[in-house]
Image (cartoon, rainbow over all chains, first blue to last red; front, side, top):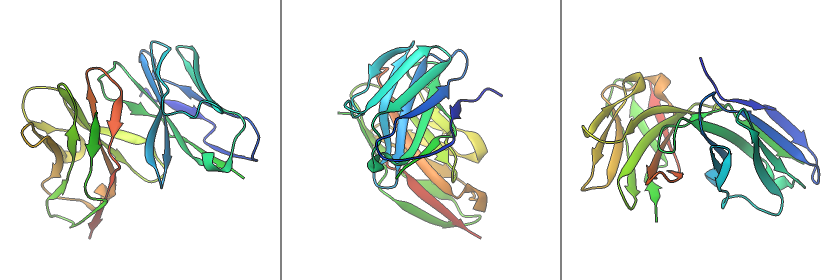
Length: 113
Length: 112
């Protein structure tokens, strides 16, 4: 049963620290998405990759966030420096094509103190 | 501009009754429409999708959705609700092989 995996599942850190979240998409999927979910803002798209190339990161605060796909089996989302307002659940999702359904990982719950 | 609207923050229904969760969309081009469900402390799970063809789409767990082009709607339905259907439901649209747009979510409460 192929699944998207995310690590860590939970992260508590202090303001100003660097945070790195990792995602392993489903093998063979060529689209990868990063989302952030909060009670106030709902589900927000942060970044979108197709064939490892970034296509859209307009939803991501550029000064502190960065997203990369070093290879087809790993996507990373970094926050440096982190701030309390970054506290949220971050989801990675992958899909077999640009208009196919997405498969979501279990999320990383980030708390920035 | 592409957008998705879920006009109800919450829907309450008694177990055994039919349920409807509403979704309307605005896209340029032919829409690809999706429904996802999210249980507490979990990621979103795909329920069903409309790409083309029959306007009534059947999906997982007995859910179905009806695509209505003239009303630009894609409402989620189930003939008989279960308590275990209680969750957060998201509608999403994708057009022209572009990125996905998600609605704000509707919390479904099914009471015994």
